[in-house]
Image 1 (cartoon, helix red, strand yellow):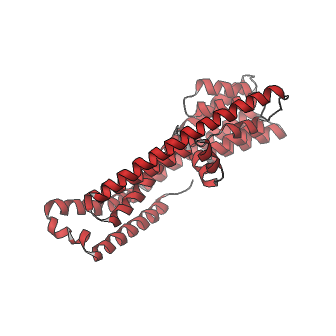
Image 2: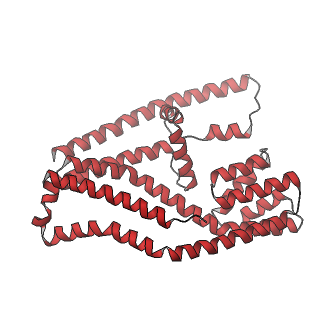
Image 3: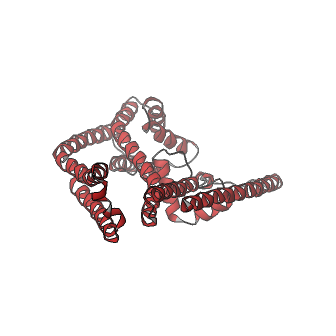
Length: 321
């Protein structure tokens, strides 16, 4: 109980500290914005490239001082990119704050339930990476949905080009007719080239936002056609056919690896299920595992081996097509 009270006091003090810094930095930010506006009215406006504007508008945290510190870390920029790819409407700074709160909450719950600080560290580690796992899951699901709708977008683009529309106009048609998340990405592609960014750079940005093999094929095919010429509609039809055939092979691979995936799920779920069952049926038999130091070492070893087995089986059943 004293440990739980200490954790709660630390949590309250941390939240109050960050709230005070946020209010102080927001006042400084407002003063800086006013100075910049006054300076802009006295000096001639400078021409800024669209790429610079996109970089400037990317904010990693609402707290200016924290945002400046986060921009120095390359890993935080990668995290912000992953959140954008997963359509998680949270800044990287706020996301890290949520991870810290989750870690403290899980640590307090585990310590209160088990009374062991060692398990508290394990709970804190699990709680810290749980939001990241959720964001990564959202990113994977969004990419899968994009892959399913992408051939439809390519067919729409091919029909528009064959009907005599310009390439940029066909991009706008995809943004208006195809469902999300393809529509949103092509809308951003259309708006980037509309506001002055070269089509080549806008296509490269699309491949950077959606790092899928099919998107890279599409970007490469369009860039080569614009540089060397050729029948763009025919190229897009062939690309759509290749993507759909690739999906057929992927579905066959999932059928053949179903046994491996089921084995992985059973092996991962069996030890926790056995521990919970023994705790309910015969608590005295399983209690030394949580009290004795040798039991603690066995738990750490078991979790380590379970994790290694998960990644080994996952690597076996993941076949690249």
